[in-house]
Picture 1 (cartoon, helix red, strand yellow):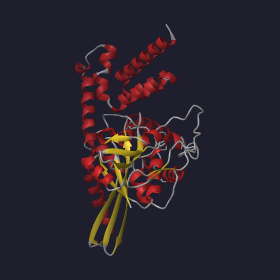
Picture 2 (cartoon, one colour):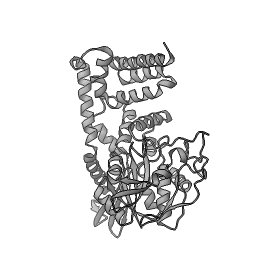
Picture 3 (cartoon, one colour):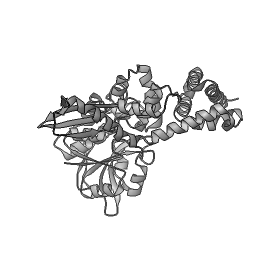
Picture 4 (spheres, one colour):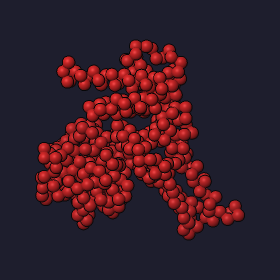
Length: 408
């Protein structure tokens, strides 16, 4: 048996071991089995399996047992019950958006009595401002899975609602007898700190999240570092000239972004934002400047690039107006036709194999989109069909994405 075949056999045995542990001892046993089988060539396989085992249990219990053990899991009472619970949990997670508002309403109701004197309000009216998007669905699932050890006997609708409420924080003050309440969600790191996560639990949640969400990684060149200085490039073929930055530029590509990773490796978010700010304001920030601000203010997602909320919140920090338009292609075209710049988070396709922020800098008379890609001058000099850009934009973006429109 050659080395390739040997590895394949070991991988199959490891997968069977993990699946068997899951079937007999549950997710905790499966995790222990994965640890026992861990080897460098199996890390990705095991991580992928654990995502299935811990986050999509209905697939495990309807597919893996049949594959490895040849029995019909649907006739096994324990597995039938577990699968039913998993389906119920999936339905709860899919309705998270509907629950957010009711949870915020309950939070506001709990705040109002704090601003009363002898049951008389100290205010004549109140207003609520919401700033959400730091903890998207994928972070919520990852953090919830670690918090409750993926125990489906515990993870029900009330526990998911508690996940949603615990991620919120607020400030409240009265001005001219108007009570101003600002509700926002914590960053994932701050949320996990609030929950008392150990570093090991944080790392486990980050691993689960990275398997669900799109990474933002660009490999170094053959020397193991970034050595090209791209000089001063300005794209002036559209209404708004764009200062071009490449995240792998030798001037900043090898500098740390946060605690781990470099701007060249995971800094497409700060680089895209730096391009927009430098092009639309007198502030000629560089990707390094924005990366420092991002890390200091909680927008760095260690090991996975940047939180999507970096884009709208960072734009506002630098004095720009940012409109969150989701995946509305009509609003996207209107914005580009009016000379506005747009940052997009792209899913795997022509621009990335993982996830990647790019700048949309204009649209041609033929309806093709002009881009400024932080990882590629070549792609930045091409015209892209609108359909390609819209179809490949990340459908599961958080913070109002995948398209954010910038204006002065």
